[in-house]
Image (tube, rainbow, N blue to C red; front, side, top):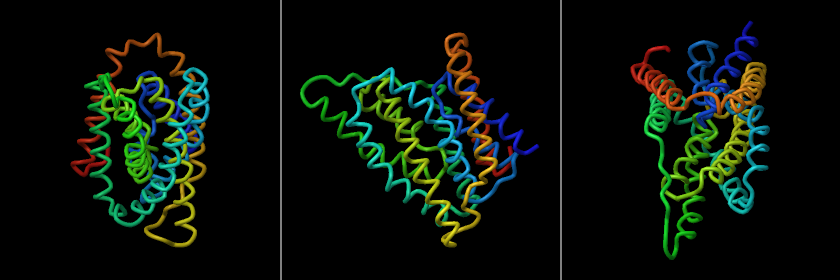
Length: 261
């Protein structure tokens, strides 16, 4: 029953979040804690496993539709890898306190909610040095997103894309490819780090993912993303974004208050 619940949760979350460009991993964190009963760094690791399973298909589709960012993608992934390792180490040490982690989760949920309620507008950098500003922003933004993404368990793409679009003036399609590739890299490296930390007894336990639940969540997420991408043109984003934003905002407030959702 737990695996079935995880499969359905992954499907439902991805189907609803994909049309508005938000990673289902953000909403699955509260589901794992409040419904599936996971605890400790294993929550973050299991969420990264969800990303590893559910992300490749979406990345392949995006990459076919938006070409010309190979260099930027490789740069972001190269920076993300060591930062993801550091993020996992931070999670099993400094962020092992459940209260501290829940507070950070509340911040991430609230930030994602605000992104939905107040969509990021693309800045159009003009004049000399515009390209340098766009590319110069990439490495620190990808590193920061990977560090936080691995620690929390969201991958980091949902943090990176708004920065590239809003502050760097990137086209949304280009930012989406780089952000999703960063999410996949961060998730794969972070997942490996959590499994290794658990095996050698470094930091708080349990750190290894709940493999069965994570695979079920990811399989459901992959199917849900397919359905969500198909529904994208039929659902009115004017209503869906505020609905999801409000849900995330309320969930973040519950976690900040120290209550179970």
